[in-house]
Length: 206
Image (tube, one colour):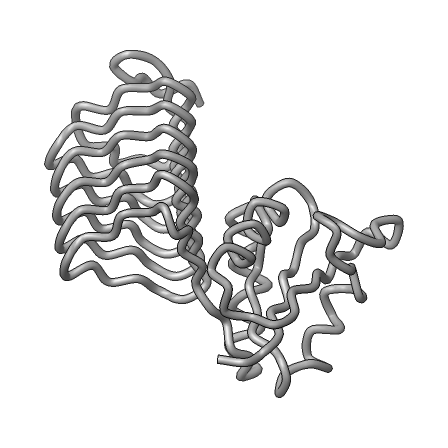
């Protein structure tokens, strides 16, 4: 672990991520990179350049990609990893992480998150505010679990999927890669086709 943390992305998600990093109290310096040149500071922290500048600081900083888009986050994080930069995960002090939980790199756990035992969380995931994942869940790489989502036990969510705010997923359900599940949706059986799903229970809309 280095003394400096560089967060890529200084907008809303970046602010929440920076707050977690501050509360973790592991870095002497926390700064942003952002491609919007009009943003000079965020959360009172300096925006010191653009995303491409990350490679200049390879030896002196840890990195976190705070981009909300799953696809964009994956593209940037995978490039950082290929180039040998140290990508870290960020866990809010008020998150509850169970025994035998595996956590990939570049994943954020927001305030109030509960991850129960024997779950596996992939790389570059967002496990957002006050969401709960019960035992034996598998969340594959670059998934966004939105605020207030409740997942029962033995749920699998495929790579790059987005589970909308306040959604509920019943036990033993598999959601395939590349899905979008709308706000407040209820998923009670497997989703096998990458589309958008809404409603109670969910139905495919495209």
